[in-house]
Length: 457
Image 1 (cartoon, rainbow, N blue to C red):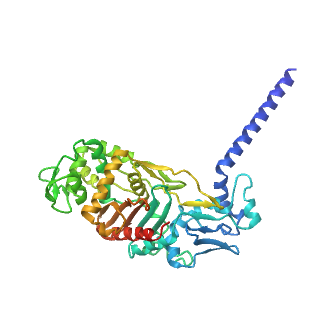
Image 2: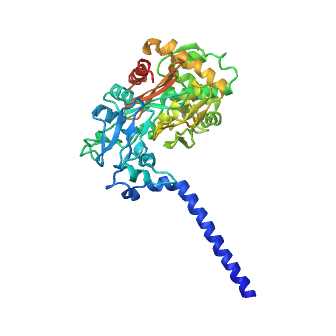
Image 3: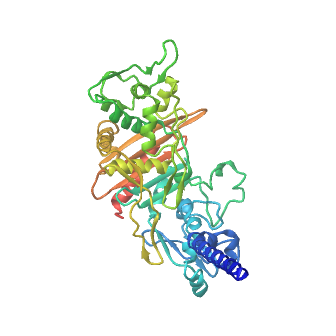
């Protein structure tokens, strides 16, 4: 009898272990099946080479075919400028551009699903159609507007989170890939999508974060006046924070923002202290992990020293060790324009004929009252300093940045958005080593925004 009972317990244990293993297997397949299928080691299941050549067609938001499969060969849009402009957001099929759509969404392009696996692909010979929210012509406009400069440009709808334009340079042509791409310095960084993976010194666009901290922590900030003689001296007898001009005395907070006065904002940063500045920055996404849906975003960092006031002053105006990612700042602009919630840019419109109806995903949050005041200040910058003529009919809000780089020409930044009800778009542009933000970055941003004004999406 005892032997029978022991055998029964052993049998029950084996059955339970089997059931537990089955549950673990099913859960793993459900959670990781798409990833396993898309892995390059398994692509022999649905292609005849290392490329995902049987992937479905990839279209832009206006129906322009960017990539498709013809006779077991992956072919691309016949326009070279389009191919180069959308390269990074589209991606390749070898995985060199890891954040490209053809890599991240290779499971969707292959037609994989949990129930049928890759049966649909085997049956039809090609995966389902994937439509991006990207406008290829807008990307061409941004790409050509950057001209000789490398950098990044992105535009998105801050009400829906849909990414409409995403350009990274340097780039190359997938159809005629340069033989010296891995050795020629002009292609350095060509596999990197700088919109999502780039990190840059921000320069004066960081004053938006310092302004937010001042609004939240200095009650009389609008009643105060400040003086600027071209430099804010932290320690008597030592060099201080250099300003871009001698702005004189009696500057209000708004005027200091309009003039992008380094002396005033360094003074404000030092008064706030590192702890308060870091708290505001982290509430706006710094020093944290961000994603734009399935696309990982390079982390922006802000860690000024608490004891070195001079370095804290430099950090408050976007210099020192501060680094920012363009997509992160695009979402910050979206949060301000949207009254507090900045959505994660989403590049997908539909897969297999089914519209992407995902609820916009909040990436950045800003206190609604802080967002309202920043909205006022950023509109004031355009009206009272840059000039609406730089952005005809756009009702723009924004901030320029001139990021100083040791041993090289400064980077040119612009971040902003339109207040027009029929144009709820935010834009970010960085032109590497292009000098003042009032130059190239403003011009590029205006050109791509004008495209959307003339060509409603």
